[in-house]
Image (cartoon, rainbow, N blue to C red):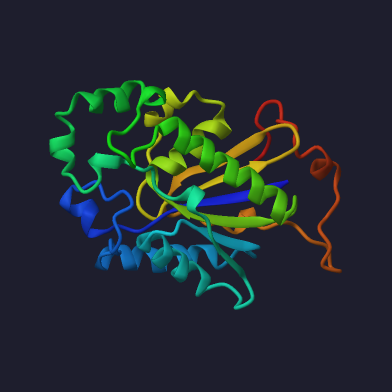
Length: 237
C-alpha cells in the first residue's frame, strides 16, 4: 500500500488580498506562510518520506523546500505540472469579490464538473481533476507500494484528489475544506483508497510510519496482508 501526504502551500499575499493567483508567477509565501511551511516541515520530519513532489509554482516550491530541509539530503525531489493549480484563464489575477458576481461563479459552486474557465488558457475543473489524479496514480506505481511520499499542491487540486479517493462526484468537492499548509492523507491499496486525514493542521503524524522488525524489514502481519480490507465496526484505530 502506498501512502500519499497531500500538503497545501502556505499562505500568500494573494490569499490575504483576496486575489485568485492561479498560475501567476512570483506569488510567494507571506511571513505567516513561511512560518506555516516551517511548521509543516517539522511535522513531516517524523516520517521517512520516499519523495516530495511539488507543483511548479513559487508558493508550492517554497513549501516543498521547507519540507525537504527536514528530510535526509538524499530525498527524491520532483516537480510535476500535473499537480499545478487549476488554470483559471481570464479569472487569473482578479479579485474574488469581483468573480463572485460572475454567473460562472455559481457553476463553480454547485456544478463544478461543468465549469470551464474563460479565455485561451482556461481549463475545465474536470480536466484539472483528471490530470491530478492521473499524476498521483502514476507516482504511486513509480515509487512503489511501500512508499510514503508528499505532494505539495493547491486547494482545489487537493480537494479534487480527495474527492476521487472518497468516491465523490466532482460536483460535491466544494464540501471539502483545505487550509494553507494543512495535511491530508490517502492510503492506496489494491482494493480501494482509504482517506486517513483531511485538512489536518496539528495532529501527530508518527502513527503513519510503517512498522518494521528489528532487522529493518516491514512487518508482514495478517493485518498487513488484509490492508485493503475495511475493518467491520471501525477497529481500534
